[in-house]
Length: 109
Image (cartoon, rainbow, N blue to C red):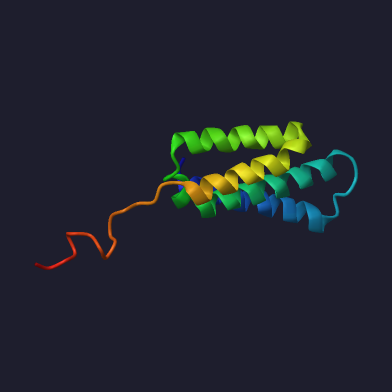
């Protein structure tokens, strides 16, 4: 995914939605198109901002996130258990041990 393309698409979508909003397109399909432009533009802007972090995500994390999202969308009762599991994963995940001050590499003999 190229970050600058996502950013340009986000700006175009948000501008199109804003123009439709301020031009007064409130009837029929134009209202739904305006809402779609604004929502997709907001999601693309969020992806554009989060791109550096998303590129470091492991594949299993992406699969877990998509599965949780699908679970919450189709079964609302899963929201609280999935949030608890996500919190436990975030707290209990293994930490990187390099760079600590107590390592042998940083001590002098």
